[in-house]
Length: 175
Image (tube, rainbow, N blue to C red):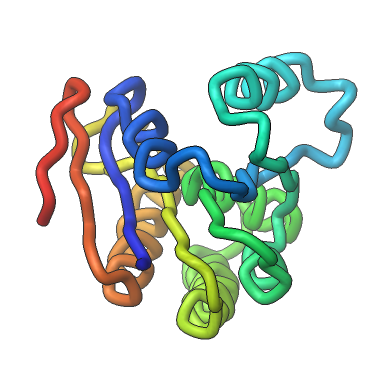
């Protein structure tokens, strides 16, 4: 099973994704972990909130390397979320101010690695992402770059999945 779960902020997409995995042992992959995790209380609070909701049988992996997480998986994975992964990917390359074509090339190469690893993963995978068409994205260069790239990343990951679920106000539409 490969499912992409998308929706707006606070739509219920993470809760839905967790229900798809169930209570069996699984690994929650927190993407985009900041290099100075301890210096980012908002990040720590996000991870702690997710841990408190999940079954005790679930582990947590904080990483920016989704291809490795998929390759090394020992249990089903819940990857949360492509938006934070995209931001971390651009941050790690210090690429926000680079030429847009160069940033696209970098992100799409990383996305291709993730999609290839997703296809090889022997376990169920649920990937959570933000639907950029439903959210407010600032109308400045970085906002447009993020929106355009996340839209493309979402499309490529969706093409590698068996199903796509859109979550709006806690309601699920299977696409």
